[in-house]
Length: 193
Image (cartoon, rainbow, N blue to C red; front, side):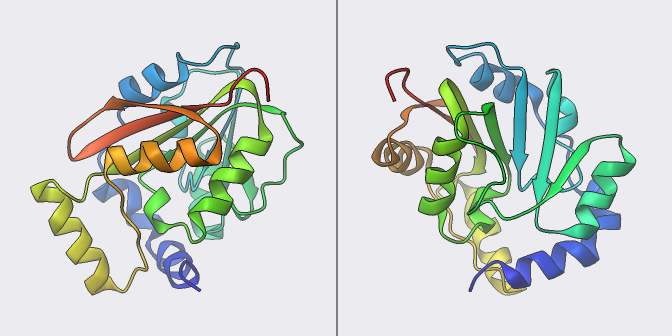
C-alpha cells in the first residue's frame, strides 16, 4: 500500500519540515473557504502535518488530522488540536464539519476516491473541500514528480482540471481557485445532499 513509507519518512523528517517548506499561502485557502454557503467555524486539515497551513486559517476551531505522530507533535507544540488518523476513515460525524483542507498532501494519499468520499460525508451541506496541490504539467511540477519517485513516494499527482473533474465525480460542485505550480481547487457539497 502506498502511504505507509511516506508516513515513516514524515515521522523522521518532522523536525526539519518547517525549515525547508515555504510558509502556507493563506490567500488561496481563504478564497476557497469563502465559497462555502455556510459560516466556516470548524475546519479539519487532513494530512495537516506540523500545522503549517492550519495556522494560516482564521477560524474558531482548527483541527489537524495526520497519520504521522512526529508531525502531529510539532502541531501540538503550536497549540493546535490534533487527531491521529487516516483520511480514508475520518473520525467525525456526518455533516459535522464546515470545511476540510488538504495542503501539499493529497498526492501522498492512497485511495484518493475514498478520501474524497469521506470528506463529502463529514462536510455539512454548503461546506467546502479546499485542496492545494502541485501541477505536474508545470516545469517545477515535473521536477517534483521525478524527485518524489526518486525518494520512493507512491505519489499520484493531478492537474487542476483533472482534480476538478475528479471531485465532480464524487458529487462536489468544484472550481479552480488558483493556478500555477501550486494550485488550489475547491469542491462544495451541494445544499440538497
